[in-house]
Image (tube, rainbow, N blue to C red; front, side):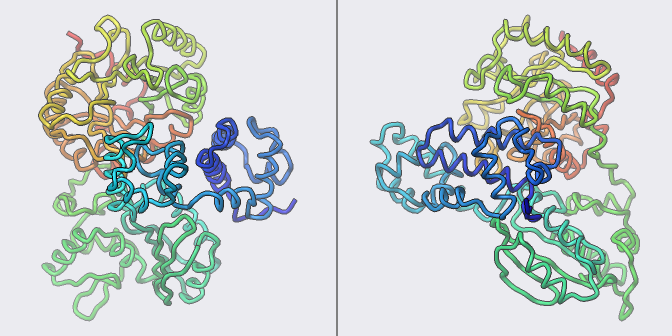
Length: 579
């Protein structure tokens, strides 16, 4: 069969997932929706090339890919389109997909609103809320109506921003396409993506080429591009099919390092650089570094920084938050790298709400090159997530012992994500807590406390001798839920006082602890675990997003315990003081 090269594995997975959502929105049998979602998940975990499987008619070998889904994937790969998907989209009001971004508003409720009130758009929904029309609908009520209104307000604020992971996925495809251009010189990400901000407004790319006009034409014609917003010989602005905007700036190779430095930013960092250059009798802009009329030749950003009397400043640190002073004194930290990670903590399995068996997660971690993992399913209070009862803990621990023998020298540490109750206690007794190698304490309910109450609640949990790590310390969901009210500096101080660690949750929806607070935690010598909070194999790989935020927070591998070797981690956990 003929295959369309522009269709990637990621595109197939995304469309299968969207079909599952569209089927739910249309009120179809839930089993049908689940089949597409399961197929997408199985393709995510596929080790071989999906497109090759399709082209060789071997797709049926993948679990969960029945005849109907097989046929649709073949159509998508061979033609670049899927009629079934397009028909589903046309049958559903486009506003319903946007409504799914409102916290607490799922497909079933959207379907009810459509059938009872004819609501097709967020604007109609907002109007209906202001008219109190949701109050009397079964399953809604005044509280739900108010929450929906609050969610709509958040959408208005954040609608132009994307999660780092979403924007990075699009950016990787663009970079790959530009690198395939025959006359390309150098090319790099710039802007907030290169600085690893947790949310992104658009994608910035800087490239050098001898013929800028031809590169501009090539970029504007890429299959990922939906429409061109502006077109010149040195800058092309487009909107991608995924909805995010992207800017390509084309310069000469001599200008490249200067343009890359300038368009990486931040504005505050650039302002500080210009002031420093001026104090040294120089001028700096996106075209060069000048001494009078002389353009000082620099082959790289490193050489530009050197002319300014600075050591190289990694892009993540360019926020004018002390990096200039540290670079002048040659005191910038050696930032943690992804290959420094030796093990992964905060992992969920089928014992609670994880999608995989413990053994499957072990095998995946070994494949990633890890030396150990720390399993930490939900605790008994998290009934909604299948939290572990006492007898289930014993069963899991027996399995851990078996797998440790089977997969040695790889090692599984026994842990739990224990809920912090409203009074600050953990939801197991001491005799249960002491059976674990480590305990992650977490807030999963009671978000509406005052700052004083929430801070006191968490501080009490940190004082518990069995608590090792505080999970997702502020409870935020990026672009969806604000942090709960808490004095995070007091929490960091308390962790420092009791020798406890904090988590930098690597899930791209959280990235919590915030990088700004990582800087303070490092000053207080509080250890930071970079944890994936993985609920499936794909989630293990979220660790890369956590590492980027850790770097932005000035963290070194010495600051992050899961950079410890297995022997060092065993000693670290064995030295915990439970008295």
